[in-house]
Length: 427
Image (cartoon, rainbow, N blue to C red; front, top):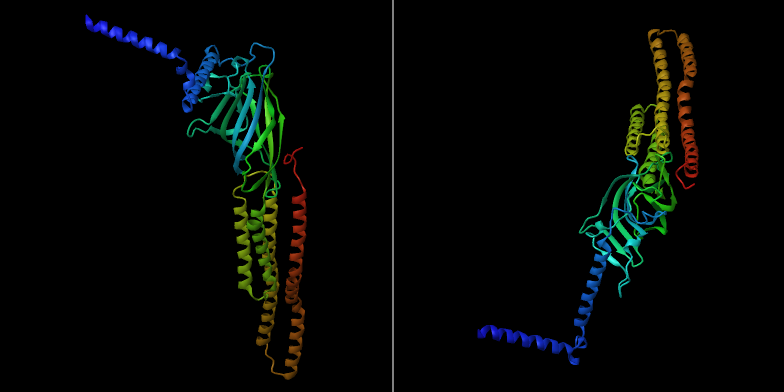
């Protein structure tokens, strides 16, 4: 009986001491100083955040969009921050892009009383599923994915007035219809088209942010230069229902320095190499044949390699015109040699025929020998134009081929530098 009574007495004394200590002036909150005080207020702030979130989400239904019962739609402001553009493929007509997709809208159900020293509520990615978000999708997407390392790369901030800021990091492969008529001296217009999948314009509208697009200052492309950008509305109608749509278009100007050094200059040198045969002797048949065949085969191989990464389109591209013309020049040089060789061989055969006839009809008389020599020289003079014609053809080709090639270059570069096809620049 004494032990329970003693324990009860000790507890009563302890309680009286705690109450007295709390009421003493020297033992108030003012004695908590330094890091202990900041930790104390931080614990209170965290409690305020938690309490505010619990109150906001207690009766919140993420299945219902804001203003669903009202007569006006939710306006969502969209902004893009482009981090990289790469893997631009002419054969697949697409490109890869990395970007931050940022959306801002107002949801009156998420308004709360502003908390001291708290600008906004920053939600964890696990809580974002409990908040309504717009059903935005990229219409020209071929493949896309969210970044998940080390956690899902998305954020959501809720401001006291009910404004919601939502951001996602996305990598996507998007379709880009290209016109390759001027390739490789071309520029392309690619786009990012975003629409609402399920909500009509009566419930949801996408609009561009006043600062719609930004890009990383370190953004560089291997074969292109990123040109001008423009944004616009593109609302569409499906099955007599209007859906909101916004589009970003940007210009990609191809840097053709690579093609100058790897395609144009080598092909010019090959064409010039085929002209060397015009300075070789008309009797140097093996050398001229080897040179002609070598340039034709080299030009054919280079032409196939230059177009291997391009789609099989039905129209003529700039690189097709160049390669076909260069191949025509080296082939024409080979044909010129064939023409010269034919005339040279005709004269040789005729000369051998004359010498053979003189051997079979050897005349002993001196007068007849003199007459025969005169007749033979007369026949040689008659056949001389064939060999001279071959030499003349070579002399003309030395001037004609380079002159025509220079004229072709002047016309080609003037057309493909100045001419601009439709749908490759902003209207």
